Length: 317
Image 1: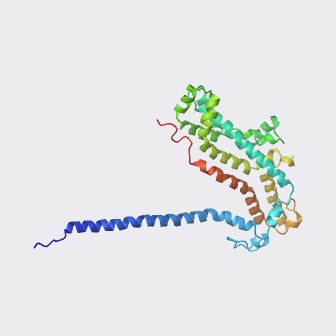
Image 2: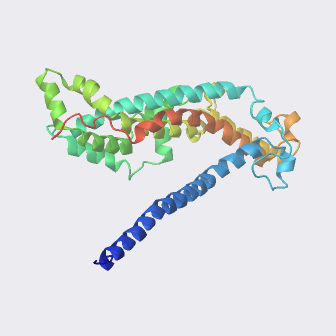
Image 3: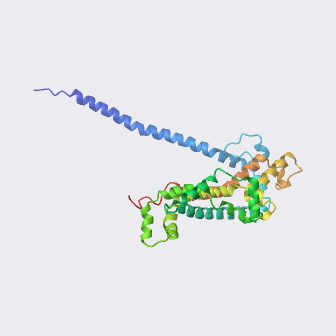
């Protein structure tokens, strides 16, 4: 009888494949573990400053000076927020800021997109000249004093529209939106023209809906800018309290808190009953939270448009 001997070559091959299979099973586990640890570290580093600001805003001002606050207040108090809302002007300023942010965002998006679509049409002979003029405004500025006199000549001083009209068109947003429009297939526009659609109908029914992702991103930039700015209120409408914005009122409150901290007899805006219970650090933290909450509430609804494009798969060329 003949003995069957195992083939040495096949045994080595099987052993190598087993080892490779073992390494192949370990690699995803190592990658997922490292990726999870790295992302947890990144989220912690990103969120900790904001969480610490919330803790400081709910902690007693005198205790905050000691330091050592991390993720939980030592002496919980609402005095910082009471000091912020102690002035009755804060509510009207909030409404002015909301109205300004909404109008600025809507008008800026609509008008800038319309201009970007016009400048993206190759048959428009002046598109290069007008684009160059807008780009130059990004590099050259007339300055603060000429800008003030321009607003004065336009009768916009101490007017609500001084917040809206200067921000109707943004050169940077114009370039971004025009670049995105270039990615939209020309066949869509040609199809609409064959169906008898005019330029405005093509813009409103075809271009504007397909630009939703880039418009959502630009809208967030415009809204954050309009919400956070306070210098134009200081420059153009400081003599009319009813036109003051939230950021300008919070800036004045912070200045009053710092003055009250250095001189107890000065407590304008903070209130004498709160002046000795808050510090510039604690009031700054409360102001930061009050100013950032509206933007944080809007952001999740716009985040999905940052990556998803509505024109995917509409036309294959």
